Length: 106
Image 1: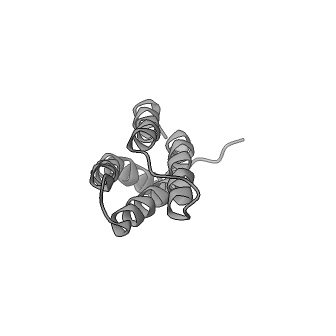
Image 2 (image 1 turned 90 degrees about the vertical axis):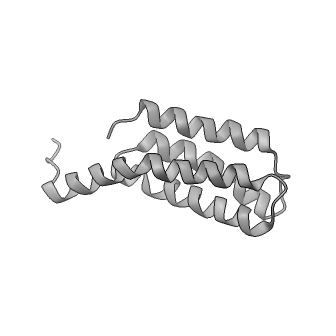
């Protein structure tokens, strides 16, 4: 039996959902800035993706969280020197997040 969500939690979930497109737009901006940029831009990109991967599921966007986690892991590997950065691979993973958002509803 599912317990109804409190009005306060419903409000937080709605606010997160309203802010999510802006957060993903910022991630896309960082993605576009990564080509030929410094390590700090890549770190900022990773941090933004990591935050979405961690928080989206808590606010009812499980698919967004799961697809963001794939990009999070890829960027983590790049930062650790275990993978080379590929704009195409990052774009592919980012497109997965965009698609998950289109199909998600908390």
